[in-house]
Image (cartoon, rainbow over all chains, first blue to last red; front, side):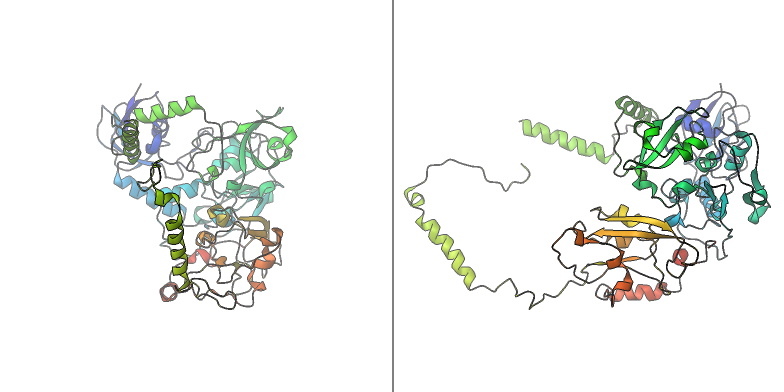
Length: 348
Length: 197
């Protein structure tokens, strides 16, 4: 099994693992962001370039560095490979450039976009981007299209990640939409306004990293951070029936598939579950969904803490601190020390 | 013990002078009489009105743009910024032909501020990406019922104001900043440059 070092963390991974997947196995801040790569979809990745990393040592046999930054989602690891992501200033600079390119034609209409608050591009540009725009050109614009009665396509917002095309390709029996034209004017579309009609077409909404494909039944209903995400399931003859419900009071505003920590769908759901079952009685509600603390959706969101999971998270974090004492120099540790001393003096 | 200022209670036996209380009463009266000759701290409101602070924040206004279209797009950032959770809204999609009524494709069909909950901190104004909500110099009048204190769009939209007094808070620095940035690239709020509608 090849051993790879990513940002000074060493890990042994199975043959054929990509750098991105290896980084995800380590977890934490060193994972490169990915806008187009999607584990459940074959041949995805390689379009958006946000996952660029520097390979400063190709392998144990051939330790020369790779000449250019490589897309970590498409590059498999070699034994003895040394990869730099956040530790390389060049990469951070390159990623900044990539974000600027992605935002070149993005309308930044977040205040009216239904994806705002759970948008990958929003997170990416906040974390890696720059605030100012240098371009003076008018952004490309498209007309909004209804793909069927349930999906709305805002091509203006699209970053051409090809995820939805791969969903249509791999998940459904008939491919009805793809990318038309080339370069600046290329667009995701159905040829001559065809309607996408199959049981799993709704999944293109979930895979879209921006607000280009949105749920028409949820359109302008509520901002995501005002809804309560709940895990729920139902008996469905077409799919697994395990979904996340986005509720406001007793009302189900939206149904989506459950996404894991990398924003990838755990199991695909069918259109019946997604669009047709907005009645609370149709679902068995399991409880509040886990939402990352830094997400805006986590405000006013309460969930049961899984103590075992918390303990695992903490142990993992400590393990990958690389021998550093996490309590050292942290203000939290200082505070705890102070309070400990105060307690002792109070006891006396 | 949070501070060192709290006094420790001692059940000491009182002396004779302490027990008759008269010196303590006289001392108290002395303080009262002293205040008769001091300058009054109260004023005869509403005949007399105190000068407001330069940064006084009063009732909100929902601004319209230069064509009279509502600027608010119901993005919910004011509501999420509000520490008192006073703001609630319902969004709706603009129908064709309503372009002169609403500035963008989404607008607030219902926009309510509970003036009883509002603490007039102005965070909504800071959060607004569309320069739609501002706090004015207007004092919010009291009301006999709670329902009256929930201000909807009928009370908040700029159309319902004769004038919007926000001059006091516009200091020279703010005016200078506005003049300076007038031609600068603050394009996030320029309509039509970035979207397809």
